[in-house]
Image 1: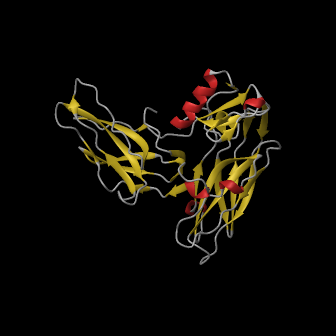
Image 2 (image 1 turned 90 degrees about the vertical axis):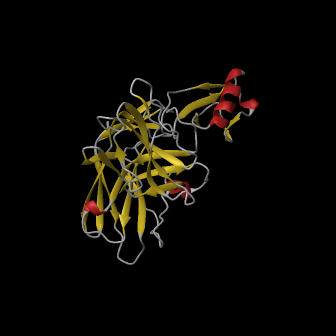
Image 3 (image 1 turned 45 degrees about the vertical axis):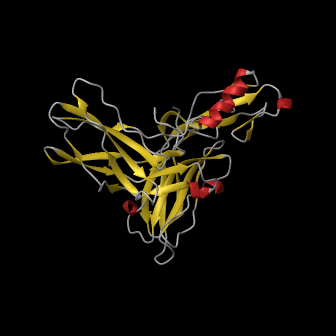
Length: 314
């Protein structure tokens, strides 16, 4: 995206639909999602946002002879009132070029929506996913570090290229020939991605008190070993919450990078409605592919929310 880095990266979710309220007005609804606040160095950086209709404004037609681009965002700051918002773009003459508003450092950009005097266009994806690139060092004795991460000679390090400070360090070490890239840009920071960006979708069924997370067949590509592991499709079981044990819980569904087994790393039920997504508890050889958000009670699979976080190539 052309948006400046603001440390807020989407991991999954935040789908948008438009519903026509009147001929001249559409309402916006956003599905649940997870973003990563990279200013926070713990599992607390992974924030779940429940889906909702945008209540602050609707998308309305531009004035006759004008057009504009609106931006749908999630505002993360309490000081600026948290929630989904529509940032209205600056109208320009129909023959001119409209420019989308820029999100602030506390806003997660979701979609752009082109608007004319005659129509409200389809949403254009504006989510900023993490962008990692694999690098290795030529010489171990140089002790290269990028973004606080030691770059080795015998294994790849995955560099967050969205961070301008990290990009500057990467550019410096590249210019003096200290590092070289070993793979394409990806939203995966552990060197594993879903091959061809297909497969491994997670769906839920429920039989009290357990949920079954069904992982569809697919393939994972390990950039470190250049190997492809086939997942034939398998189920993982996780126990739903019991009434009174908490408000919400977030579990992570993962695939083993080597034997293609699937499993679940369970989170801890929140007492106050804010749950932690337990990424730090997932072993290094497992690749997270979905986050499941459970309510305090459940009577059907539809009561839980599945957020797709499969690592895909950019």
